Length: 305
Ligand SMILES: Nc1nc2c(ncn2[C@@H]2O[C@H](COP(=O)(O)OP(=O)(O)OP(=O)(O)O)[C@@H](O)[C@H]2O)c(=O)[nH]1
Ligand SMILES: [Mg+2]
Image (cartoon, rainbow, N blue to C red; front, side, top):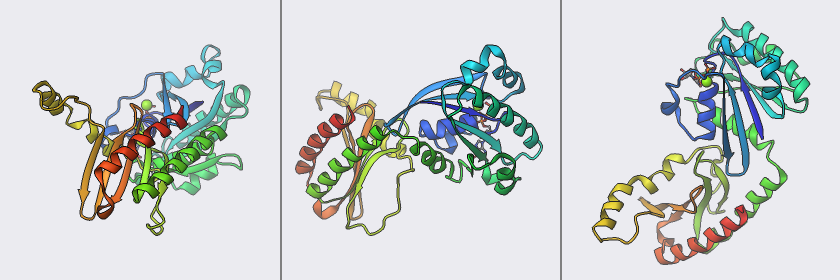
């Protein structure tokens, strides 16, 4: 699925792409270089939706090219979702942004009349223009205009919700299948919660939460990338241990934390997928957990294939 992202220079487009599709947090995206022309990348959003992002650099010398005969067809055709990013912290460039937006809509109408159109008011943490004003200028009955901020944590949930609205029926079915596998697993292991995560963006593919937890807040649009990382963190040490003959393999597949009365575990399912679970201390039995995980792993891989 092709996603086209446009907006003026420094509006926050590349930061947003890296934040949502690569699970990068604010500190990792603070100092990006301006994008030269159009940067395209393919991601598997939530492990469920193949997405090719066309991140169109917003400097003047690039923007005019997008509307030339040479490039317009390539850039504006086959677009399923169009994100126009407006910098809410910059009053001076608002009219210029509107001009680019108008032109882009014209070309989308011609090359991708069915594209879904979304406007994002970026940097809302340092906004100078209210969302009402941006809605008045950019919105209409077919166009959603939403405020986002990466440091305040609103960018990921807003964009993910929009992306979830274009998931195929097949993708939704896959997620439901995995949910059922996890629900069974929870019952067997008396787990409080289990999640299957897409490693690249750290986002949930599916989850199951035990009824024992009363109204827990949703974690659906939180990236758990930092939690998955420890599985590879001690790799150098494992390698040394293996070379010295203490262990046979040097790839870890399970990491466990003991947190007061709970255990939190991360399990490696494949190169793309990890599982993350929360168990009560009194229900934790390592041997039984390991064999359940092995079973669940095969079922998940089958559901995803
Ligand atoms: N305060 C704040 N700054 C942001 C946010 N998102 C991006 N920025 C900053 O905006 C600046 C530009 O970000 P980029 O993502 O490189 O902007 P871009 O739209 O890709 O720019 P071009 O590639 O030149 O078109 C950077 O300094 C970012 O740190 C946000 O949510 N809040
Ligand atoms: Mg950029």
